[in-house]
Image (cartoon, rainbow, N blue to C red; front, side, top):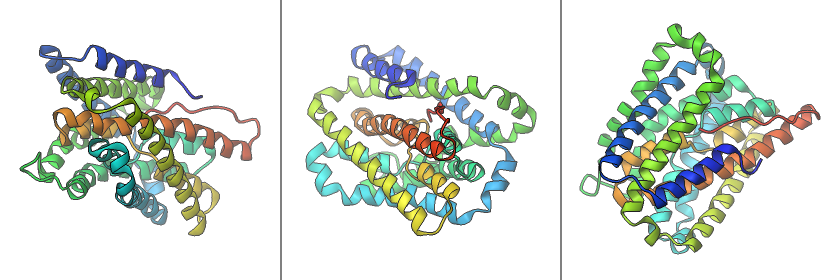
Length: 328
């Protein structure tokens, strides 16, 4: 449960990027391959999303509003409030990475998978998670520009970033959803095999992005002590968000199924969306520190939420012991 195949392979990719980073023509090749893989990934995400699920889940606006608020308001507020502690503890670059983590959209597949295992509101989870990814294409660059005070003189403007991210993520998603009447049955039949596409795409983007950062001197600026502190910060952040989402769901009077959906929908951050966004929003040596908090947080959230989901499931069926495969 603590170290599945994807986690081990991801650690291997990080080690490979450290020891054998892509350079020169190799870097150009992997950048092109990564763009194609991410476009295909979001095309398939769009093709998987059924309109029946959208209609079934869209009417639950109170739940969606709360998950949306946790993802794009509560997380960023926690990141900003923690600045006096995190900045001296982690340094400016890793703190910016934590702040970038806080403004990312939530996951799609893992949020739905854990909600399903735990006995939550699956249609609402599908609608909420998908909406988070779509709105995040616009909101994340705006929040990055606002909270990190990035302007056109220091890097790509927010509007330029939104355009670039939309072309890379939103356009393939829309095209995939438009093609669902044609390929939807095939996609639904091969969901398990297509999940490998998610993992492969993430691994490619991580290798490409970390390679560029390693060449720029990533490990000369990030120490082992800083990595340990960053891991502890990610653990505390996840624990705090899990507590707040559970407390808010109960405080606002949601039923058990909806509270489960809120916990798993409002506490996650997407690696599949975050890594390509980092490539657009950050340059050179900044990409590595921007990705490290996301890589660490992503693995911790999968491990912890797998345990929580099984705990919920055992409350309904003591014999339930299955674990979902989730990577986005």
